[in-house]
Length: 385
Ligand SMILES: [Ca+2]
Image 1 (tube, rainbow, N blue to C red):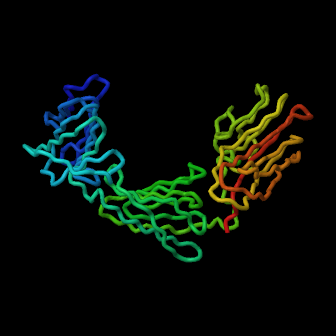
Image 2: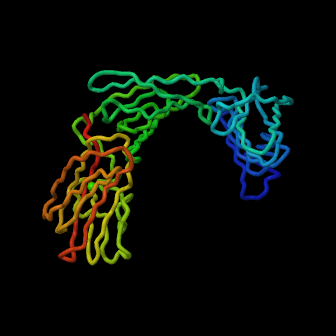
């Protein structure tokens, strides 16, 4: 395959193209040029320099072509068939599409785009872009039976339909999501690494704040279901990021925790370590030498107020260490940690209000000068009912 762009400004702006099963160009990209030819055939031509890319066909149209230009431009596209309609829409806003006039000659459609800007040309879109798309039903089954939920839908930039929603299940837990033929993303609000993505089915945690996305071809109406495989009833539904300290890099503090120190860090340091974890394989080891130290969690923006539980395990000879939860409107609590050779579990209940909330672990100055606190398995959340 020989791709050429005679007018491309520099050799760094390499045009690209991909061929489909029948040898036709199905995807192409042109940066800062006016012509793109593949094996001698002119795929795209413009009367002014522009950035352009095309997908022929796309899931939602016979062709989808993006054009970004600094001046008005007339573009000419090679197409297999004469289009019935061509629409132009702003990027990411297909609902604002408007029909545009085009000329057809010798297997090419010519469209004039006035003014500088970025447009997406929809050639024979599969759906009426401006009509609202109907919601998609989601059938949920948990221990108490089945109930319906609904996801909003929109046309995606690719022409596919995306159904989405931040929907809370009545009973948080692990769920088996199914949507035959569709792409599914279940995005966890609190611990991003627990998000799951797949085609047709995924198993994912589903709790407060989780976002569900289902992406499918226009015209399809996948049957979407979520069936509980494990309930969180009676458990803390943890919102704290990396409270088990499983994420980190050697010699650095545990990932996502912020280190506080007065003026200089000295030899005090919060280590991420695999030496003596009580949960998983890693934990935090706060070594206090000449100066106090503390680490603070990534803030959690609580969606709901009410009774929360803080739970963690700790050991070590630190004599005045503590864990503090700080919420909005002066809510929060401080739990003192007792020196202990063995791991000890701490658990306390707190009433919190919606808004940003942090967890801070502190080893203050004090005797003896050298103290060590091991901490692991820190969780903050409400107990699922
Ligand atoms: Ca751990």
